[in-house]
Image (cartoon, rainbow over all chains, first blue to last red; front, side, top):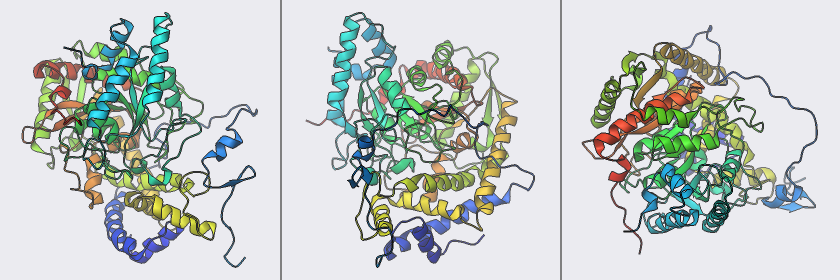
Length: 99
Length: 509
């Protein structure tokens, strides 16, 4: 596994929806490369025959009866929204700037 | 001379309330006064354990408890005993930020299950305690609202992420607090502040309403100054909750009974395993940490316990596995902070640009590092090498624990390799920061319960050293039995609790 490059960090930041200035990339890229190199050792130890564990305590899915139960009131759900209109979350334009 | 109630244990406060020797209003006011005197602000370089104080709400609960008690109403054991809640738990009507600027000013519209249980136990909530942003850190320096300082030495870190909850206890600002432990965020702060903290078995306490960091690792737990106090809070918090699909459908372990049994100081027949890989035997641990650990083993031996050495070879890979799994899960969990439904919005012409700008401004560096690391580990072409491998390491860690617990009842180690370091010392070196949790992380990977309790002060610097106890899943009670025994033995030698030896804090006029 190769180390993380500055351009990789820029691409990952865009995927994760975090704007990064050149200064951010300068600061974080080096640190991230060190961390990635350190954690790469996870691939050294476990062979094909070792099963993966996703969850510490084995559990089955939980089901309940499909009946309507009280939920958060609409006003409460919207109370902390940065913007709301007519009982809905309001967001800036979704499609491209020219749309 | 008037009694200083803030110096009492929660159990003593509960007994005094029941006996009519004090009122809940008096207890709450004493703690509010203490907070006003020593907690200060970031600017004043004070303890700064609390992000938000709810004086009126706490006093209102206290008044209602006092009235009910006067009227002869039957009350829960801890009714009227004040508590602080880590800011990771949502509290209806009280600001909740998880230490992040992206949630500044957010007032949750509902209570976490544990918040509800605290309210049902009639415990006045003093306020919300400081933490590393989204619980990412081991020093509380990554809080978006400035660091908490260690009451033992204000130039040093109180641990993290739950530094606020631990420092509040050590500064006598609260007798009990709630923490969350994803890789050691309850136990490591307890270790460096000479307090007690427990990470229960995964699923033992509902996570509903706890702002998620890494869902397969997170567990809420109790923090106190004594093992018994911690047990009393554990029983308030624990138990099945249908709102959390990972909640264990089984009774809360009888931890209070176990703590009382342990205080009898008889460990005849108990087998205690020292994990070679976590013991510092291979070097790298501070001398005073190793010394206090060895002395605690002697105490256990003197009470009848048999000490054996066990080896968990795959623990060498635990830290790496943890720093793949945690960022992966966190990168997914933190996608919800998208500027749409709650929290910060930095308005831009399109929603995508708004999200990019909001997350850039709202998240701190450590959060950004981990989100990017997780996004990388989960991306096509790297998934098997990182995330897949880390999940296999998780299996190996579990197998090591299974083999170790086949030879003994509990495992022990120093909680952290060193006493608390200076604020700023490791902030620019993420890997050095991650190493603080080397001994606590394996328990989270395996879902087993763990406790840290004080084992003394390191002779070279006079700062607290923590002793960690680990038990098999569902066997939380063993932590309390062994922990209470060790606490009783050490307290007898010290002539009182270690917390009483903390230096006096400067009181604001």
